[in-house]
Amino acid sequence: MKKRYYIIIAAVSYLFFTLGNVPAAKVISLAEQSTKLPIQLYGVHGSLWNGGAEKAIVKGQPHINDLSWSINPAMLLLASLSGEVKGSIKNQNIVGNISYSAFGSFSASDVRATIDAATAQELLKLPMGELSGTFNINVESFSPNPEGIPEITAQIKWRNAKVTIIDTVDLGLVNLDLAPDDNEQLIAKISSKNGDLLLNGKAKINNKKAYDLNLSITPEKKANENLRQSLKLFSKRQTDGTYLVKRKGKLSELGI
Image 1 (cartoon, rainbow, N blue to C red):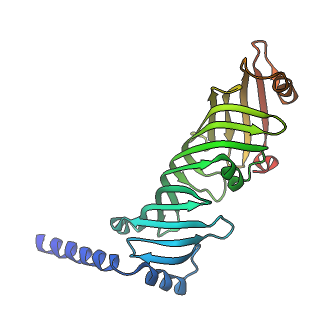
Image 2: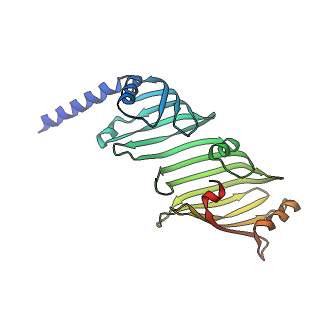
Image 3: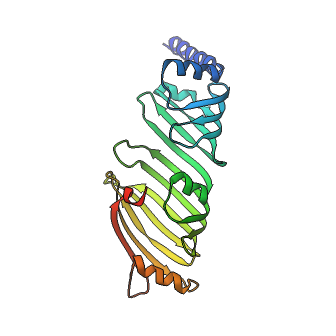
């Protein structure tokens, strides 16, 4: 019994070693000939397990430059292709663990990126005036859902946050925590500090991409009169001096 076990281990190890030394360019070329890949790679180099590409193109998405990967071959035993991936989108570096199963499911974990707000606004097409500052993004887990919103757990810190529409509003540090709940909704908790306004609230997004926002806004002493007057246009002033924003609708109505 032990002898058979050792033979299997030796055979699997030899297979992994052999595949690991095959040039990545050759494997990708063969894959492109036999199936329609969702991504096009240019300037491929290195091996199957540790390689990279000068550019990666996914239809409808920004180009990924300086792509590199380090694949865990042991995950093939679980019918999954998994490993660490690094790349650059519009000169913003991103690193994370990506998994793709033989059944076609995709997931990501431990994704980390630091992106300037103007670039993030361009990538996400956020209709919010002009943003500045820096987003520090940490995605613990991500799984897309073709029929609804993705399942995501993430923490986003927006540092030196500023929004310019007519005047510029300094929001200081904005924290956004994303996590699913038991009802398959995505919950976004919002808070801020050190800005002209203090934000504190929550948004819920369901699988029909409908949102429910409940946000409290408190002007700080340094907030100017124009800003205070502007708050009255879209929020209701409370007896304690805070302003309450309650909104429901579809994400599509917000241009998202």
